[in-house]
Image (cartoon, rainbow, N blue to C red; front, top):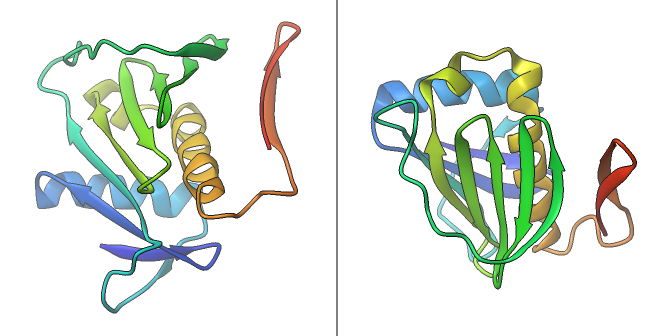
Length: 151
């Protein structure tokens, strides 16, 4: 399924059509996504996810700098991007290629939209920043006197 967000084509890739349908409903509720047809382009961004087979998906060893941590969400800066974690789910972002790959737990998929928004909002902002968007603006959150700011 392809959409346009901020003028950039966004592809959603899931293992099964039922996973795609569930995630599509979540993303369409949370964000303004415009359906887009046509061939893939070099500056596309992509989110590729699988539903975790259990409440505890496989843990990847992630090395990098923890740049933000709050209840239910953390962001680690890695060599090629970021690793985002939220309520047992995770996305690893490679900003060079504009791709996020990860696992979503069934609990995350069934959570309230506000509990799902942080993971996808940061994924979109960071992936789009790799395409030159948000270069003059900053996006950030703060909690308990600490913040994560992306320029």
